[in-house]
Length: 287
Image (cartoon, rainbow, N blue to C red; front, side, top):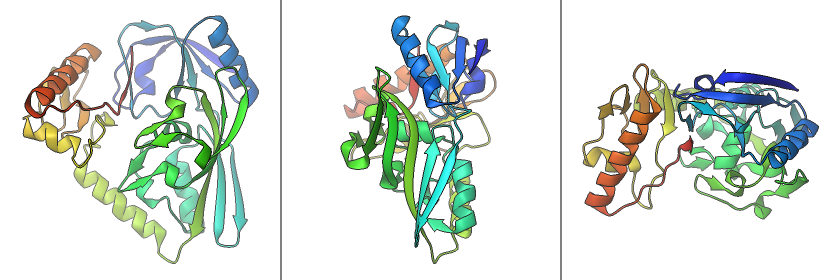
């Protein structure tokens, strides 16, 4: 297992903000994960998995947690049963890699998720979603480790999950996930291309961003609420809410964590004052 010291966390967050990790572990097997979980317990330090980092923002300075990158957990197994395909994917498999499989076999069920910059572990933990589809719509089961290092294989119906939330955000480490897709009569590659074009139109993908900042409240949209209170395009220093989509934070150059938190707290205070709504953050802040 590779272990690196004094690593810039900007390289592990798509918004490119953050300080330095004392250590980052790069496990290659489930046994490595068990070792890391034990180390976390022995040293009484929080274990923080890192995937693509599309919804994670790290504070500035030195962070002394047990950071675990899933970058080297890349195994993929494909099983076919008539028109059904079962893909068993390690936590570090990216959505881009899934798209390649989907295109090769012309499979449906994943197309709405195709533009999300995510890896399997993180997408499972937060139940990532787009265009009305959630990752748990296609998940069959999850192999995960609890906080004692025990292996658990749970079927979807045994897992506590909801909109942008699962039990894995607070307990355990997602190691491997099986998803179910089926052979399609549509030209899936074309459908995916259309989704990506639509995503590019609506989202600020030309700048470092952390994806959706807030979860949509019931029967409303976080971006619409932010726009209504004048936060679309609002910035402090080099961090701002995009003028393309108000629910996306963007780093215009060299944004600081301090300015980011100031902007978030300012927006949240104003929204609560005007609408009496407490928006729940979709991004994960590591302080």
